[in-house]
Length: 263
Image 1 (cartoon, rainbow, N blue to C red):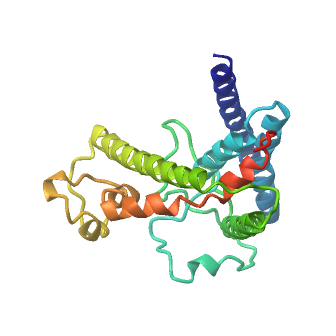
Image 2: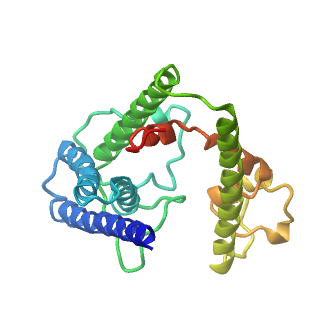
Image 3: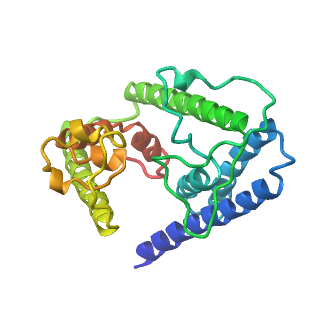
């Protein structure tokens, strides 16, 4: 029970740290919304995103859980998504750095975003800060991904490890089965949540065009008013892609390297 208790305490504590830091960051941006320049908004955003990680690490909790929790909080309440009328273009991922002095606030109503809790509101950063936040996040993600796969490539050539084919085969099979189980289970859970929320009206094709191509094996009277993501995961092909796309392994190997045990 000691290990289970430590796990629960670390998990709950890490989430609590993320929520506390998220609330403080919300008040920070709220009271300084007319003072911060776009550059300060961008810098403050990423500084606040890292604060819960270091707090949890100093308390010997999970900094990764706090970082993920803070990411969810800031994505919902601070990093406003694009508005409904802004359809992404093929070159939208590169349209970041249009430097300007506009103080326009970004629209905080995204069609595919998670809505804030009832009674709370989402902040609106400047449109210039929003573009640069997306740009820096995209660059950071690309650099981190390149670094982790470079580390994986160098790790394979290390002479400090003995490779056991049987153990490797069992590990790969276990990853495949466990991820397939979780993808199917979570997909059904998401669809169940939508049904329980009462979204039973059939959507218009103009609102969710992906339904006509994604849910061909589902009858029309079973189609609920789903988001594009929820509608896509109904398709077995999409679930198969989710199972295979998640088997990256580089992060797992990097974490195993930090385990203070040999072999």
